[in-house]
Every structure is written in structure tokens, then in C-alpha cells.
Length: 577
View 1 (cartoon, rainbow, N blue to C red):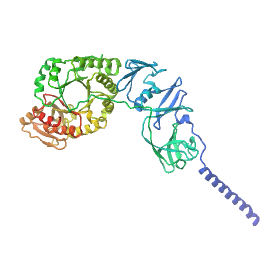
View 2 (tube, rainbow, N blue to C red):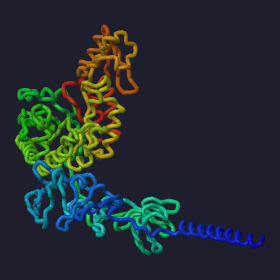
View 3 (cartoon, rainbow, N blue to C red):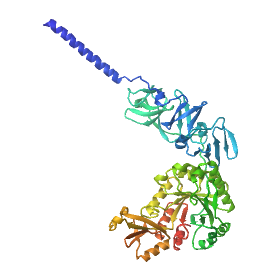
View 4 (tube, rainbow, N blue to C red):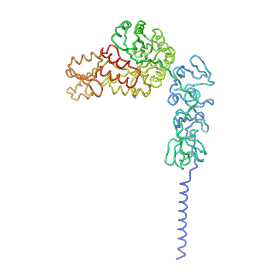
């Protein structure tokens, strides 16, 4: 029996020993860091020898740099979207433009030289290279005009760029360790780091912190391997902020748009002004883009300007893009040569008629068609205006999701005044509603103030209103829900203040304050048609003028003369001094 038991005990002992060894091995494997390293070419997604990864503000970009003749080039779209949106690439004429506060700087494709106004400089190697769908710009050239720093590294090639000068969490490495792909000792090693190496903490965890090394490796490191983090403010000592100056008035702007449709109408300027009070700027609708070469049509009058000047009133001629529907404004603005012609035409008109200012009213601008080109147009025009002491104001829509591409902050750098077109909340073709409800205008002012200084904002206000006609659809003759506009065919007509009041009187309708819109509202029925109107009157006007006063805006503008009730001017001069 003992002889039979001994082999069994030995086997059992061996099994236990194997289990113990396996357990110890498993524990060793569990707590032993892997020495596997990550392929950095794959990590940085480098697929060819002429590529370099781009790490921007501690984030790996989807864009890649190109290495051409040992120089670093980056895609124009990357520059525009990530580094400096003021660079403008004209793909039609293969020219790269950059506009400073005082100069227009241009560089032709494949050229070593660039011009600053009338002076030509040698950069030493090609500044920009055209591609099939964009352009490649020398990163050194970008840095010359941008608040960025960069450093390049090899094996694999990568460029680390800093463009945001914020406060960061920084730390030093306490002892040699590794940066890994993920938090955990089994994650592959990205980089070995040594004691006293500096890193940036991107996100703190319980045991592992997400970090960025100075050479652009982003991964995870054990928290206990780092010193206590401290806040560090990044600065760029080599960059000097531009100083933008503006031509501003030392009084509230009280601007009125005067719609002039013929040369002969200019003779009525004395009559028009005599029925107003407090106006210090007239903006007649004299000029419009008239062909695809950038030429203007005009119906301006020197006598009109002279009379306004005799009354102490400045004249800011209005230039528009919508009178001649055969003109392709996108073509004009996206070609540097035709855009330059347009600017020269505007300046020629300003000189010829002795205008005090230029008011730009370009509408129906879309991001895809020529959003960037329009902003470039304003920059270039502003330099010409300022060099000649002429005010530049730009009419813009209320901020909304569809016009986010309007770079109002940069526009305000160059233009003297930004005029909010605080009307057409509801318009021909929309549902019935106010032309300019007070909450809507208030939100528009508040949104604009996030991008534009208050003393550069002029709030545009309507003197007109719309009376809405709601006709039940054929199968809904007995409509009882007057709020459900889907059951109606909606049409509208523009009325002056007095004409709208006359419609109420004719139809025995009484207006009452609508708390939601902040306006006097009325409705009435004729046959089976329902009529609605949110009135423009002293009540709505005063509410908007209070916005100007409360937010210390530069002033107000009114569209258009002739549509107001004479009593409104007493309200205007109450707020605009």
C-alpha cells in the first residue's frame, strides 16, 4: 500500500509545483512591464520619406507636412484653418496673399520673392507651390506673419507647432521611465524619457496621466514618475501683436440710408434731410457692381455731397452687389485682378465725389462661393480707405449658424464700423412674424459683441414693416388654429410706418403690446383671409435704441428714409447725441 501511495504523492506534488510555478509566472507576467515598442512611423502615420507629421498644440493633425529640398511646406487649408486664417490663396491666379494692418503682401507660385506693397523681398527659396486642389506654403514664411513657433524632429520626421499661448500643466520626470500608447504597463512603449525631461500633462488619471513630450509624442506615463504639476503660461517672445487703428467719430453715429434710384432723385436731398432730426451720416444707394471685370455703375451727385456737407452731415456712399443680377460677384471677388479693379473703382468714386466714407452692402454671400474672398476684399479695401482718411463700414447680418464663416473679429480689425442689419428676421417667403423682434435683435447684438468691440458696432433698424396675409388652403377653409401656419398660404407686403397704421384704421384693428416680440401687434380678418402685423413705431424703435445706449454701441442706422413717421426723430435724438 505504501509503495502505491508514494508515486501518487509525487505526482500530486509535481502538479502542485507546476501550478505554483504557473501562478508565479502569471504574477510575474502580470506585473512585469512589456518591453514591446510601438512603430513610430505607424504611430505618426508616415507613409513616405517626403512626409512629416504635424503635432499642433499637443494634438496630432490629420494633415501632413511635405519636405521639399529639405524645407518644410504645409497645406494652405491647414494654415488657414489651424494657424492663421488671414492667409488667402487665389487658386484662379496662383497668388498667395497676406494682409497686415498696413500692407498687402503677395507671393506668386514657385517664386522666391514676395512683394510688400511696392517693395520686393527675396525669401531665398520658393514660398508657395500650387497643387491640384490647394497650395503648399513654406512654414518659415507662415511663421513670419503668425504667432506660432515650431521645431522639427527626425526618425520619424515630425513638426511640433505651438499656436495657442494658453496656460498649461507642466511637470518634470522624476526618474527614467516610458511613455506608452495607453495607460498600463502592458501597453507598447512610445518613447523612453529620462529624469528631468519636461512634459506637458494633458489629462490626469488615477495612476496614469496623458502627456505630451517636447518632441511631439503623446501618450501615457505613470503619475508617480512625475513631479507635482505646475501652471505655466506659454509665451512667444519673437511675436509682436499688430496695432490696428480706426477712423472713429467722437459722437454717436446716426446714419440714415437714402434709397436713390435715379440721378434726378439726388435733387431731393434738401427735402429729405429737412424732414429728419439728428442725422449726421447719409448713406445714399449710389453704386453697384456692374460687370465681371469689377467695374461699378453709379448715379452719384457731387451737389448732393456738397449740400450734406453744408448741413454738417457726412456722406458714406453705399456699394452693393445685387442691383445687376447678371453679374457674378463670386467671380469678381475670387480673382485677385478683378477684386483689385473693384477696390480701385470704389476708391476712384470716393475721391471723385469727395465721400467721407464707404458703406459696403454685399449680400447673399455663401461660404462655398466666396466667403473667404469677401473677407479678403474687406481687408484690402480697408487699407486703401485708411491710407486716404475714408471711413469704412460693412453691413453684416445678425450672427446665425448659416453665416458663421463671417470672420467678424478680423473684419473689425480692418473696417472702422460693423453695421448689424437688425431686420429681416422674417422676410418675403418666410412664415409670418416680426421683421425685427426685440429678443432677436438683443441676441444679435450680444452675439456680435463677442467678436466686435462695442464702439465699432452700429445697430441697423427698420423703418418698414410687413403686413402678412394668411389665406387658408383649399381644404382648410374653416381653419380655427390661427397659429398653425402650415394650414395657410402666406404672403406679405412691405409698408411704411404711416401706411401700416392706415391699414389698421381702415380695418378697425387695434394694436396691443405683444410681450414676446416687444412690439405692438394687430390682426384682423377680411373674408376668409387673416392679416397679421408686428408694427414698427416709436415703441419698437425706442426698445432698439435702448440696446444701443445700454451696450454703449457706436450708434444706429435706419433703413430707409421716407418710411418713418415724423415723430420717430424725437425718439432718435433722445438717445443719439
